[in-house]
Image (cartoon, rainbow, N blue to C red; front, side, top):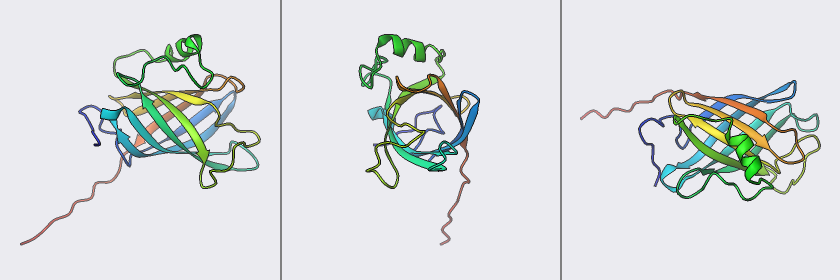
Length: 169
């Protein structure tokens, strides 16, 4: 069952976010399209689309799913090569009760889910993510032990146009 509690109106199935990911002096255009959001089950999934990351593939799209921090998923990751110290270093960047905390794990390249590695890019790690309820923004940090640390993901919600339907009798 999907839920959209008050104060999280831009975190729903079908919502879109756009922004950038910064790595060193480089910046890459990113779009995220949430496919399914179930806050009551602490889960969401979607597609992350990034432009300009590699010369071989100027546009990449990956599928990811998320663990929403709460009763079901604790702050301690205990997987993906992240220990308690790594968790503290990343979670420390988000301090406010206006946030929903998550971990986003990319699983495969779209449309070719058989591709396991890309020269100049990695989806072997995961993102520490915060969604800020009051602003509808997403801030994240990518972590993989063999990648540049604290690559920052900054996204803004893209409001969807409202469509109305009327029935005359």
